[in-house]
Length: 634
Image 1 (cartoon, rainbow, N blue to C red):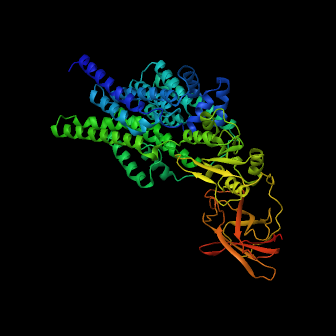
Image 2 (image 1 turned 30 degrees about the horizontal axis):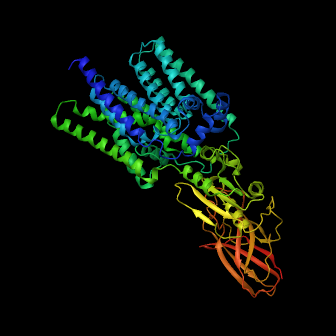
C-alpha cells in the first residue's frame, strides 16, 4: 500500500469518525439544565475581561483562558445552554482528531492504531461527558493532548530545533491557562523530559529542553502561587485528607465511567483500566513515554487530592485521551505478525470496546443518575407559583449565578450565605442565619427554599429549623421533590412575621456535664414563646456543641422530659438531637440549634415547669444533661 493511498484511506475514515464523534456530542445538547459550575461559568464569562481575570483567580482559584474564550464566543453565538456547550463540543471533536495523530506517532505508519484510537475516544463515555459540559475541561484536555504530541516530536530527535521546544512551552502554558488542573499533566511531562535527558546524549539542544522546561515550570508556579494567595479567604474543605490508595483507585475508575462511580464498581473499573494500560509498557518506544506521562500524572493528581481532601472525576478526565490511545495502540499491535487468529482477536477487542463505549453513552444519556441538577425546572416552578409577598431563599448561596441565569428578573431572591463562590468560612449558624432571615422575610407571608449543597453550607439545618419555628409547623407546607438533584420547600407563615433574635438569646439552664463524654456539649435551652393553657404544644430551643471529629452518630437522640414542681413527670418526647437533618456528618464547630416540640395534656395547668434534655445513643445516656425552667401561661 503506497503512502499516498494510505493517507487517503486514513483521511476518509477519519472524517467519518469525526462526524460520528460530533453527532454523538450534539445529541440533545441543550436538553438538560445548566448545573452549578456551568451557571457560574456563564455568569463570569458574561462580564468584561477586566472583571474575568481577577474574579477567576480569587473566586474560582483558576486561570482565565476558557472564560475569556467563552466571553467572546457568547457575543457571537449567544448564552443559551446549546450555544455555550457548543464550544466544548468543538474542542472535544478536535481532541479526537489529535488523538489519531498521537496514536500514529506512537505506531508510525499505522492507520489501524490511529483509527482505533479515534473510534474509541469518539464513543468513550467520559470523553463524551466532558465534551458536552459548559466548562473549561474540553479546551484544557485538547491543549494537553496537543502538548503531548509536540513533546513527543521534540524528544524523537535529540537535535530538534529550539522552536519546537518553545512551541511545546506555549501550548503547555495555554493548557494551564485553560485550567489549573493541567499542572498535573505538565508535572508528568517534566518528569518524562528529565528521564529522556538522562538517557540521551547530552548536547546544547538537550540542555535547551531542560531550560525551557524549567522556565515553563517557573511561570506555572508563579501564577499558581498568585491564585492561592489571592484566594486566601476562600475557605477550605470539611473532608480533611483522603486516603491516597482510595483516590488512586477512584481516579482510574473515573477514566472508565464519568462522575463518581458507585462504590462496588470502583475497584473492578480501576482494575480494567490498569490491565488496559499495562500492555503499552511492552510495546516500547513512545508508548512507554506516553504510559509514563499518563501514570505519573494520575499519581500526582491523586497525591494532591488526598492532601487537599477534594476529588472530582473531571480531574481524572485529563488523562482519558492518553489512556484511550494506549488502549488503542495495544489492540492494534495484536495483529503485528499477521496471524488470522490474532487479527480476529483484534477485531473482537475493538468491537467490544466500541459496543461497551456506545452502551456507556446510552446510559449517560438515559440514566437519571447522570442527569444534571434541574435548576431550570425548579426556577420555572418557583416563578410560576411564588406570590409577590413571598421570598426565595437559596441554600447554599453560591447557587445564585445559575438561579439568576434561569430567573434573571426575579425579585426577593436571597442567597444564604450571600456568597457567589463557595466559602465554608461563612457556614450558616444561628448568629449568621437569623439576621439574614430577618432581612429576607420582613413583611413576607411565606418563603420558598431551594436546597442544594446545604449539607456543606448549612450542615445543621439552621434555615429550615428557623423557618419551621416561624411557620409553627413541624413539616413544611409543601415538599416538592420532582426536580433532579434539587430540593424545594415552601413555607406559609401562619401569622405576621416577627423578627428573630439576631443572636442566641440568654439561656436559663443548668448544665450538668457529669457522665459519659462523647464529643457533645451543651450551651442550654430557652423558651422564646410561652404557650397558654390548652394549646397542647410547647416549643423549646436548645443549643448544643458537637466537637469536630467526635464520631457522634447522626441519629443521636435526646429525651425531653417535662416535670411539674412536685417532680411528677408531665410528658416525655424522645426525638433526634438535631430534628431536621441529624447531627452533621462533617466537623461542625458552631452551636447546633435544635427546636423541639412537646405535646402536653389539655388539662395541664398554668405554672412553672422544668424541662430535662438528656442526650443518648444506643450505648446509653451522654453528658451533658440540661435542666431549664419553662412557663405555661393562663
